[in-house]
Image 1 (cartoon, rainbow, N blue to C red):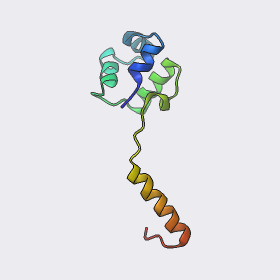
Image 2: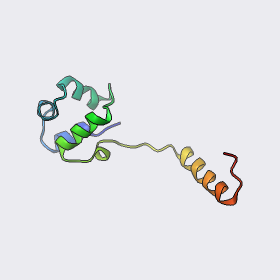
Image 3: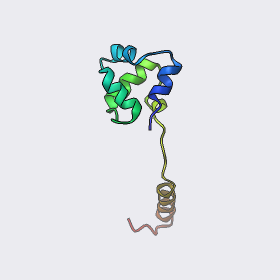
Image 4: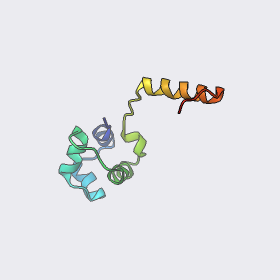
Length: 85
């Protein structure tokens, strides 16, 4: 999920403004905003620069708690010399 549309509107830009600044097609920007397509790192960088934010600001990162738990357990096991990695 991303916040491109939210941030764009907060900054007072229209999709065509972002298109002009970045060189990306208006349809492409619309697809990114609706989640129909995901921007490449290059496209995300261009959009972030145009909006005056960081790439991280554009995205909502959903962290899987089980991944965090597994990573913590693995770190503890490595520290104890018990890792079966």
